[in-house]
Amino acid sequence: MTFNLRYPEIKDGPDYWPERIDRATAVIKKHQPMLIGTQEGYHSMLKDLETRLNEYDWVGNGRFGENENEHNAIFYNRDELTLEEDGQFWLSETPELEASISWNSAFPRICTWARFLHRQSKKSFYLYNTHLDHHSQEAKERGIQIIGEYMAKQRALDGLPALLSGDFNSFPGEFPIRVLRGEIEDNGKENVLTDAYSLINGNPGLTFHSFKGGDLGEPIDFIFATAEFEILSVEIDRCQINGGYPSDHYPVVAKIQF
Image (cartoon, rainbow, N blue to C red; front, side, top):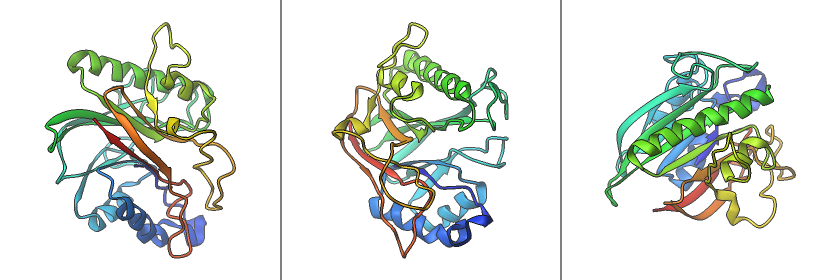
């Protein structure tokens, strides 16, 4: 699952985080995903979920370092997955520098990653989880290039398969999505990931809805996989729970196998 949780904004009124905690928890429990890539989760929000999702642990730090501001936290089912390693880098000219920012990005942007052992199959794989900038097109394009470089570097080291989830603030026809799909080259290099939406004929519909619902539009939340994975199904969950939406983004859920 990839799930933008919506940061805690008191002006949201009935959709302020304390009013939505149970809705967000319910939609996660409905699908029981093995992995959840989250965006916009502040530390207090993640702790709220932690107390309600007893079978999950999570990793990730804030974009300003430590527990500060937005996290791109990865939740994982500890009964099915063993965490082997995790880390984080910034989408900037200095990716290892905490809270670094480049290319007129509105905020420091991050990518959190983790390597897991899938206990049943005894296979290891990576999940990368990110949230691209909403303000600067250059930051979006350069940010996805940084992620591609990190994924390629890790791939060259151990050859393990990988998943990529996130809020890309980009429609399917824009550079970040097209380059991930391998439709265009990035500096002579070709990334070819499978977009989970490839299972859907036509436009999957919107995923960001500002608590208004509906499906008219295009998605900005995606799940991608390297060739070792087969995507069996994908769903944008547009349900309301107890009269309201879990977030201003719909969660996207994909069923994937080795």
